[in-house]
Length: 184
Image (cartoon, rainbow, N blue to C red; front, side):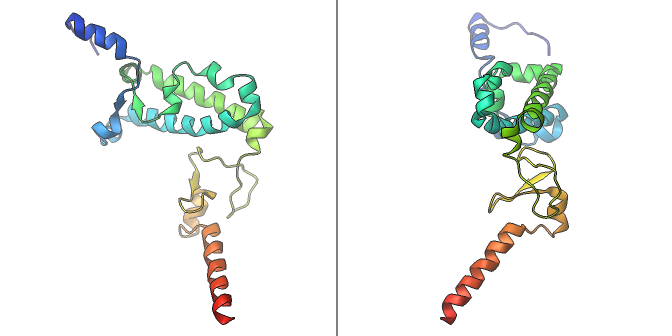
């Protein structure tokens, strides 16, 4: 991106708004993320960070250390993953934003999955395979049921013909309750 000459009013407007998250790329052009690999990567990382943010906001250790705010200099990157500033787009083009987001992701993951017992304890176990791997909603390999919120491995969910075991249990229980009521 090369700078172009603009009038003073436009220059002033660009200076004022360049760091404000005002652009919703999904609304402007939904196909943009499939066409531009870097934007797709940035969007994926921002959604992961947004999911991690929820854990860090309720973690008393992270709050005590102001962990979230020490590491994030532009809060909109993790608060509203759909909105971009002009500076974000320029940093994506230069490669700075993906690097910054990878570093933030690594820092947050380390706190949630390694350093903090409280955050680790808020993870889930897959109901299908029941192995000891703790799942979090922001994990790439995790599937979150839209009906009940159960968290499963994507490959386990596919192996079970994309049927959530919790929803299946609830459905069976509901049918059994209805049958017992009608038989009384």
